[in-house]
Length: 279
Image (tube, rainbow, N blue to C red):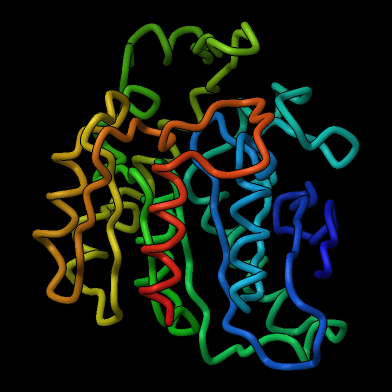
């Protein structure tokens, strides 16, 4: 198994996109899977490395990365040492980062014998699920898309529109990270960027336009993003399948740090559903 971690992929926004690849180095073209983390997430969270290994063992070329402004750095990709970057993140930067990763894997000489660029799938968790739904509609290189506990609408999120008057006045609002106890800033540019790009960021339209297969996976015990959002996404798409994981919370019963060597029962079920869908 070949695992290369913390590759610095150049992005469009002056910060590198810290990226991992997992694959069997056997010079056989493999379907490409690109995973996008969610809000307050990162590529090494919880059991994502175990999941990446499982996909690679199943003969996929698996890529995961930190969005350039997720708050991690090249030196410290885990957690959020760069809160200034976090505050300057927005949805269109994340779409640009994903495009940069797609461009990179499509042109990287080192992988050219190990990737099948005719089969690229995006997987997104939570907010990343919204990002992959938008990008799948925009980019014809993407042939399948999978969402895990995805949001169905960016316009109704508290990070997008909550407390507007004070936010505008102060230029910043803060959200507490329950695990790290950091006060994480959102600068007002997050809202203005959303309003300027509202049509592009309208997930419902993107899903209705999708012509490729879509797998929607959601836990029935998700208290962060309601299962109703998964059902909405499913209702908008003519080529989708909704899979509901029993007793699964928003992160499929994994936590960070994850010290076990295997996936939770619920995330194992997610992995199996994904691989079946991709084969």
